[in-house]
Length: 382
Image (cartoon, rainbow, N blue to C red; front, top):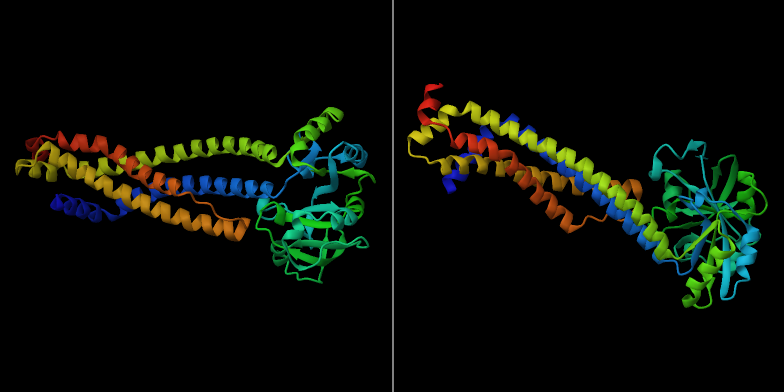
């Protein structure tokens, strides 16, 4: 058996270019699948973590994809405050920021997009938000602040800013009063400014907000308060963190199906690549197989030799693909998306086993064809 494996490895190494191309093709399919699914898992983990920090209700316009696309009014909030069991509410205005320091923020998608989050400094100081928990330098907004801003270290580093510096957001200059760091792709994209300043910046009405955070005296009352809000305001969605997270996960599950479809196409191409490589190898080695069979090799021996060769290709392709995918996900998520990389062990093992299976499937027909060769015909073909 050792000689069989040694012989198979020698055959692989004797055709370096063709073997390398087959391994690269297989590796690419593994890299694409692992990277896409790992990014999806990491984003879902970040979302779940972000919502786990909340213990109240988030109210926004029904049908809105995100707070930045929601518009409700402060009048709605005044009514919500009077609902029995409501402890307090915090109004927030979210809007996408097109430019910071005269540079566009939207070209890089999620990696560079930022939003202004307008908050009432009085409400914020009276009822600290989760941003207070992650404050690293300086202070949060205070009642007398105007064109002051609190932002994440990630955004500050991107624009080369430090505590006390001025930063230009759209057409206005703000002084950086505080820096926070939550390691959440969503929270770390916020530029926190006074609510009235945000309204002037985006020229909204004096009562416009995007969302409202509702806290209850008794957490067990949240379901009742949620139903009452949606009964009074049919145009609003009031959901607890778990419900918002589930809605997002429903979207990501559809995204995962799309990712699997794309990966399946790559896997099919890789299988064809292995099949083509092994068929060409066998065609070139008719005489070799004829001599081997003339010297006593059985069909099983020939079949085993070809499958050993494909197993080598699959193993190398799987190892290289998993290793490169691991590094790519670490770099992408840590340095571009700034979120904790989640690379499930089951995904890496599945990818490796999948690479081996793909290679074996691609080698079945070539191995069968080689095993059926008549030694006399093979030698005569030379």
